[in-house]
Length: 137
Image 1 (cartoon, helix red, strand yellow):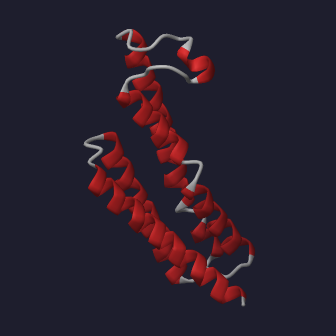
Image 2 (image 1 turned 90 degrees about the vertical axis):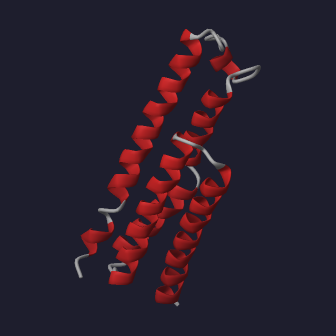
């Protein structure tokens, strides 16, 4: 199997990161235009701010947590030149569930669905790391 195939799942997650960043910016602009927040709020991120803006900001911050472990896993698999079809399935399932999770966060933000999608992402990623550890030892 070609090891480059493990890099492809990274690309949609990076794209999603940019989409979420744009969404966060749009929510900030909405809050500024409606005068729910002033520019000075962004200096130290203190004080009152609308919930929709804070939710968008937290969503964006989340892309620098769990997805980092996904990127690292894919890069390690690429570097050790041991990419299996199981690894690809795990990677693409993570991508799919990350999109589902983001869709929920940017639309209804219904917490039970959001939590389920997060934990499924987490479990998939955990399985990927277990698979890597088994390969290494």
